[in-house]
Amino acid sequence: MTAPTTRPLGDITAASRLLDRELPDRRFVDDRYLRALYADNPLGAAYVADAYEGERLDGHYALVPQRYRNRHGARDMVFSLNAVTRSGAQRKGTFTKLGRIVWGRAAEDGVAAVVGVTNDRSITPVVRAGWRHICRLPVLVCPPVVPARGWQSARADEAVLTRDTPAQWFEDLAARPAQAGPHCWTVDG
Image 1: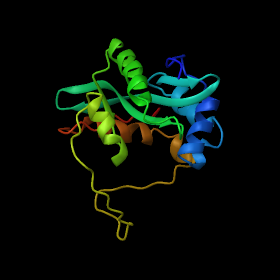
Image 2: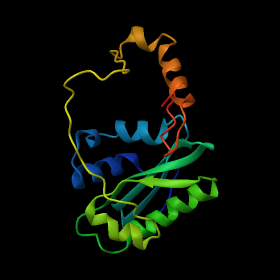
Image 3: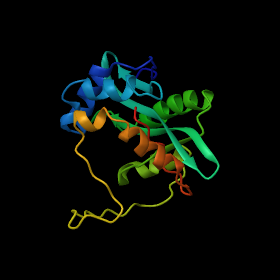
Image 4: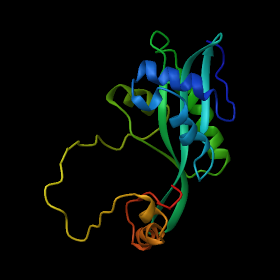
């Protein structure tokens, strides 16, 4: 494998193909999803690194800028996602190499922390790379049966999205006290 490379956003089309091959999902059938996620993020472009074997993309990893807050205020952080290595090219340290690149660039830019959710297979490499594994997350699927008190729901149609209401919703969310570090939602994303 050649040394991992970084480009401002990597080869988004090749990354979409690799993700669709290894982690099939309709979001990856073309490059529109990754382009919106990586390039059009209102908080800035994603940190992306790729690993090639010759001309073939063997690994891809991205960190997407986000803001989280607690009782001390908001902090710039990144969300870890789309770490993928081509089948047959795994167990060569690709994730660790790509991780060092994107984590290093984020740290140079003053990012406070990386937040991520991983699958069971990735816990060991993540811990070896220096991350702290906090806990396993329980999964519970609860279909809504009765509307909860205090909740509001509105169809995201043109009439709702062009009023001041969404901005007010996000202002209300930001004004609530936070202990555990929720995401800072904005009208832009």
